[in-house]
Length: 461
Ligand SMILES: *Cc1c(COP(=O)(O)O)cnc(C)c1O
Image (cartoon, rainbow, N blue to C red; front, top):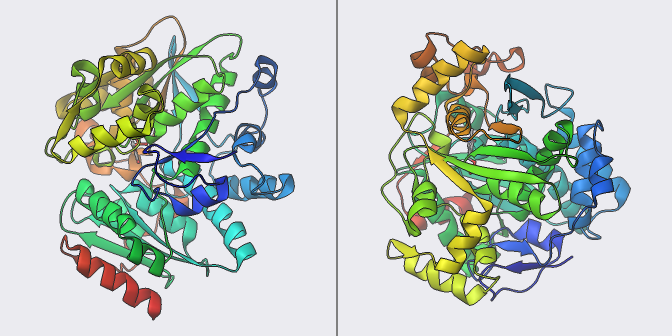
């Protein structure tokens, strides 16, 4: 199976190369040339299987010959062994036709662990086979960074640098990034927003000289392997609720469009998904785009759901690629316009997007109200991101069962949860000493040159 760039001008790569590379050399994102499909019988056979077994069946066709079956099975086993729940992604019923998919039982308490743990194990097998090493640089609004550091800490073939917006991540998120003591872990607090961090990351990837000199590898949600890992829980949830014999809908709290794009891939693989609902906070570029056909970046406003504080939604490019009939030149043209602040989505592309996605937004007050409402009516304490999903899902309930993705544990965002409910959610016992561990970080201005020289210095030492 080959991977092609959404901008049509980068070399085709194998799964392994696409995974190790991240962003394509033409600035685009890698997507599979064709999406493999599973039959009705294949999907029916998944009901009741362990998560790891479903993961193997869903992801195997995408990985080509990068791993043998036994290597791949072992990678999956190791990836989820550290999770705090036997079901890995348990479903909980919230109402007559509304279910919560709990994606926060991994080591850093957010759904990012599903992909990052898998990527860590895949990088380890692949790099040690090649006797190679790489420098991973990531940009995070909080959860990707902590998940990446957790997945790569102590691996000798990898240095990991994570940029996060200084002062704009929660204390738990920051501490998960700054307390690991391994010398291959580097937490960088950057002046600016998540979009600033993401822009500098793209600059580094587009600086081919720097990129090659440090063997840059990306694990942001632009990395195809991340998206792939997230396809799995759409299958586990839907088959638990009766798919493929009935269809299921999903509402997904969205920032960079990675998680919901994984749902779209599940649908393309043959999973009967009725509706895929995008849920945004007041940084609502995606909801506006779906309603107005204008994709215009605004200023990023801080919120109580910081992992969704994004106005340039990277993975949306993958959806645009399909919406524009897989025409790389058309994607290049709109991405060029984006440099000037925005673009108009063509009528044909808009029709395609509206066939596949619905959307809704939730402002700050509505988010707090949703946290309180969920507690009162279901007894569940939701993190603010999950609460946005909950509120938007409640407005979109229909005939098919609705599954809302709970993307983080409430204890990761205790201030927002406490403000809404007067209850301060405790950390699970396995990480209760997080507030006592010493922190280590480097503060930096928004300056590409300084960033690049710091990275070069650290990996040389
Ligand atoms: C990353 C994240 C999101 C947004 O996910 P995308 O894949 O970027 O859309 C939502 N909630 C939480 C808790 C996250 O960490």
